[in-house]
Length: 381
Image (cartoon, rainbow, N blue to C red; front, top):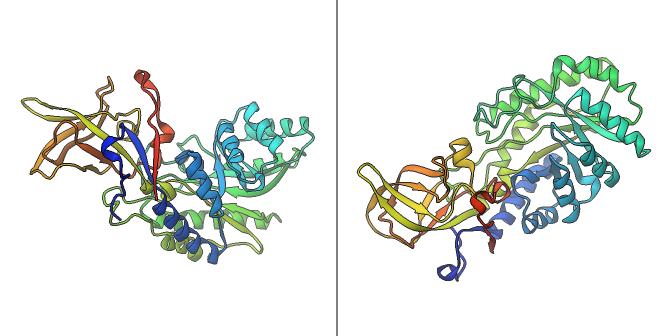
């Protein structure tokens, strides 16, 4: 799908985040067309993008909200998500965040440690409430993704080890302000090898068999998210293969009678609808390298600096012959680089440049470092 640009782009100040709402609607429609017939319930992971306009469209398409902070819980409530459609995960929930979510009577806390369960029980009791909890398990499944965004190995900080499960179940019998309603697992992000979801399903099947042997059947199962996108070819593959994703679970996950299965997708929903638009400030030529210096930097899109991530870079205003550039930002850090040895049409000051697939972990991770102003959002479609 070609990039849709605002008609007044020539006169607009840069940088800005450009959101294609038509593509977002198409993505949400495809997502629900794959999920609903298989009876999967989708919660959108707010950490990917918490822009209110984006959230309103997502809510209108029937998704719930997956939150990892008290601020995200509040943003979900403020944008109209019903409390019964909100879940709250996160390895380090503060007392204030827990109390806020308890007061709102959200559907479920995804608890990540024994210590959290004890605190949650105490705080729920103080509000004379019974909190619904799902145990986030660490299934020790390798997602085969970047080591910064894998979450399902025993070396990661997330979740409760399967080896602790018996002790946790015993402890829960003494925590009378908690109601165990489900299991939760999330093994990582930007997963493109779908067979790892089969591995996760098999692990969850084993855990549920173990629970069933002890007379425990849970109504709620959350298999996490992590479905990746095509960063190299966003125009050829703007919408992920949701059919294949849900089919993998349908073929491998054994559901218990009446059990609801939830997923929590973020990047796969919003990444391709967002683009960071920037202008070239200078083309600096050295003996070794030509630098295309943009007015956007790691303050607007930190993923390349943080993870070494790839984003397709396009010069939208030049038709010249291809040359090689290091595409960098203006921030006073050597890591403020979007791409090295990038082939672009001959690039000059004032050219408009697009950094594609920036709808996830772009605007939401922006900062004011170097006292830069936050870039605005612009919508088409």
